[in-house]
Amino acid sequence: MVFDFLSLAKESKLLNPDIFSVIRFQLLFNLAEVDEAPYRDLKSALQLSDGALYTNLKALEKMGYVESRKIKIDNKDLEVYRITKSGKEDWILVKDWLKKVINNGL
Amino acid sequence: MDFEKIVACIKEINFKPNISNFNDKLIIQKVVFLLQQKGIDCKINYGLYVRGPYSPDLTHKIYEEREKFESLKTNTKLTKPEELKIQQFNEIFTELTPGVLEIAATYAYFAFKKKETPKEALLKVKELKGFYPEAQIALGVSKAKQFLYEPTKQELEEMKKEFNMWENAAIIDRQ
Image: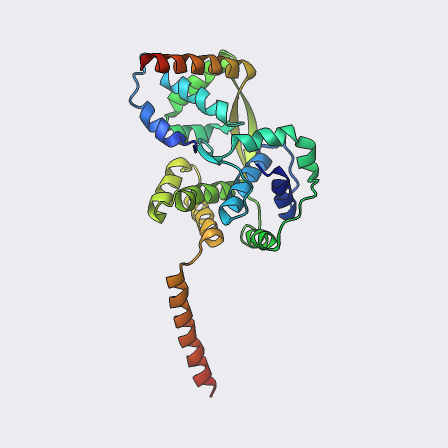
């Protein structure tokens, strides 16, 4: 089956953000799939404001889940983010837990 | 995944990748996607990710076979039709600009892989890659169309008829 984050991103709008942080959830989910992602790609693809994206990325960085570095694309300085080893490990734990919730809820 | 064929393709486009470089990895992802859309089957599954069409399997394999990939060592020889497709790619994408390739591949994903209308595909490119200037989006989209568009039988017939009319007119003019 072909992976399609757009449909998933749209469906996530239906979730109650009070249950957990939908933004952090989406960031970890997407960063776990790609090697690295520029800030501008995350902002545009996930349709987030600068405030929401920056705050959540910094929070994840503080938690040791993501790390950033500066690169140049087409002569533009950009910040790219990647998930860390501990971020990936904890994300797998969350994913496995969610699978269990879904399987048990049916 | 046909990793040997991927290495052969990258070698054929005359690109020397450095896996530590973000731009080089981006170029590889998008070039292989576009070539696969053109019919060079590298047996890779591409999905739509925050970075546009992307294959996590390809990234893993590149890291796993880093030395082989960076030195472009392969015994696989591309077929004549495959070489012609790459030649066409080289003629259209004369410079491997990451931004243009990213836009071209994203447009190709919607217009050619998902078979959405050109208008819908363009709207989605603008939604996902709206941070690029309009001129760069237009260039990427036009290059994707140039590379991947294949006229239908009916369009070919109509073109033939039109060209015949012009040819006949030229013959009469010469007489």
